[in-house]
Length: 316
Picture 1 (cartoon, one colour):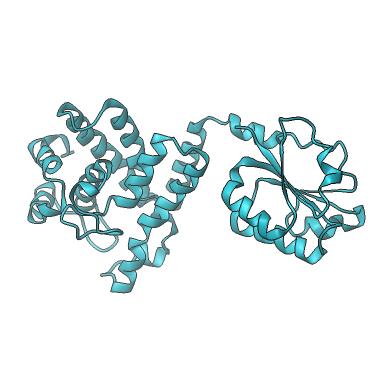
Picture 2 (picture 1 turned 90 degrees about the vertical axis):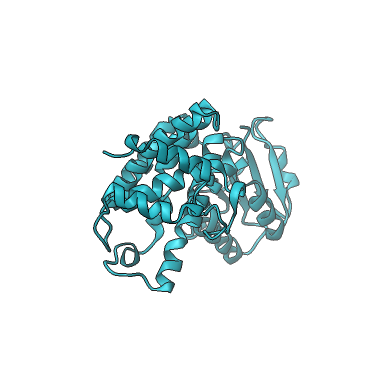
């Protein structure tokens, strides 16, 4: 990916000649309205944002940098402000990374730290997420492990019947582990409540689908063609949709629901029923199957039949 520098200055002509090479192309904004529009559209293509303090009031620059850091870009891009050295503390305290008095020959190549970040293995990020979940909520972690196991088995059975491909099975196996990652953002008082949830509390719980989907949606801004991230997004958002259209968050019906989410939905419900919850003890596998049969219209009928016809694979 070729990263760019966004320069905010009311007099950009004096700076453009300092561009190092076509490896660090510039985009220019002469006011903050244009800058916000460019950032919202192309944030992840910028390695550096440079602000000319001679062009704008210090308070306006500080508000801009503070909002940028707090709302949409807490780490990258690198924010550099062209200002006297005497203003360094003032600008650094609002979230700037560097204050330089002279912009000429300033190295605007890709920051070293960003180069190292790009070299990290994707497995490092996956392991980071896994350990975060494990430390935050052991019961949730165990549920995710179980759902991944059940999903992988059910997906393999679907593969044998030509419903999915080998590659889709591989993506789904990984994505299923993160189907409930949005629950990390639900208050513990709601998640761990020992009794029945109120309607308001259940509405809060239901938001985990959107919270989880939002995480993967943000990743897609970096990797818009990444099929694993798409599968994770679909699974996180739609695993509580029901085949009859009575689910959430979008009340999708039938094949409007991605097949990946329809598969995970069965694995998710089966594990939820057969393990202890904060509000009840586990059902036996036979009890869980009876409960699922009583609401069979919630599930994809073809996938549900595959599940029922191979139930021995799912009973530990």
